Length: 106
Image (tube, rainbow, N blue to C red; front, side, top):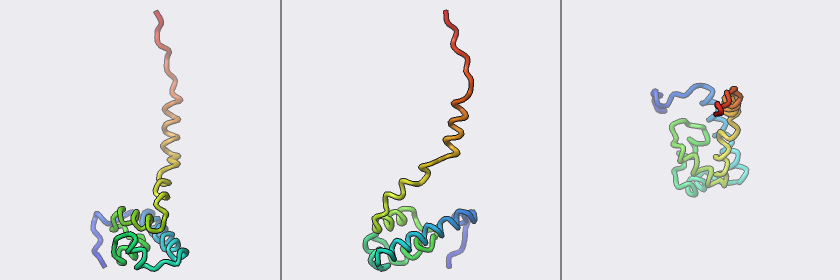
């Protein structure tokens, strides 16, 4: 087991979210009836890396997560991240609603 450092510590909510993502990736692999070795070969990484992805490890590079998703033909799912951005859109709408004076006409 690796020692937790400042770089690997995540808030509990993010750790839980990564665990969910890992479980979803594992279920996708099992639904396709693919072995760890097959995914590792297709993703050009080690089986240990795939196991760590499926556990939702925060120390695995995002590129490995993407290659595993690609091996499962789920790589387009990465485009769903931050797609809605409800908070950002609300903030943008608030700034658009500010009243402005009309320019002076000569």
